[in-house]
Length: 300
Ligand code: ATP
Image 1 (cartoon, rainbow, N blue to C red):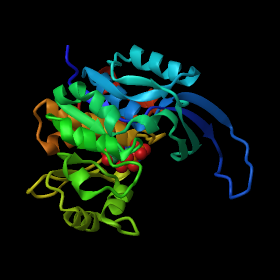
Image 2 (cartoon, protein in one colour):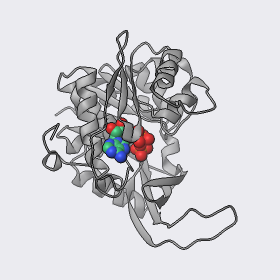
Image 3 (cartoon, helix red, strand yellow):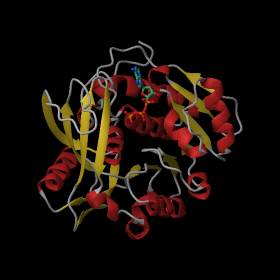
């Protein structure tokens, strides 16, 4: 069966250290907890879509090491198609996550993710071409985005995270952009985040994206700006959020899921906010992503 969703992106082993406070430069602090689990924006988005019931293929790379084998095993358990997952001659990517509730400060060593360039994705063009939706982020080389733009025929969703200035021709090739406030500011070359929704909208207009833009606003929800249409605010659902890690990733996966179900952009963003809110009620990255059975009906 052809995968409906293809995720082209990163896979990391997350080393998550819980800290009471972040160390200052030159200082050492003791962690109060350590957890090791698969993560990376690509892997998070792929698992998120699979847990929503989609058949998902992951295009990316891990190393020939224990972390790579652990990630592979976990993705297989999640039911992902792994034909597009390579074992590279570099160590598996690692993210050191300093978790100071409710947010994380993260340092990434890309490792094997660095081989996921234009040629790598082009070699896997069949997977990308046949997918109904292709999800990308920016933890792999820019060339991966160029290859997706040249190949994909389905709905393309770009989560421009972590924040990087992207060439206009690359981002313009994606149907839907899903930045957070900081990523949006980076895309338009602004030095500060937009302070309110008017500023968010002004930056979206400055972006002049030919497709749709959905700006995620954390606990404030999302601003949905359909191509050529009026902006709509989608509020965040009220939940007892304990950890916002992977909220953005689950939002992107659920947005694609909603669009594949035939929903319009606003309906799909409401579904995405519902799924992302659930993600914030559990700890971790992949571990926090909801299954269909975890989700109460929307609006309850
Ligand atoms: P991350 O990088 O941690 O995945 P992000 O910065 O990309 O996150 P956010 O804008 O923080 O993404 O969150 C994505 C979506 O998750 C929001 O648009 C919102 O719908 C939901 N969300 C985030 N925080 C909360 C919260 N405290 N309560 C309810 N929903 C939330």
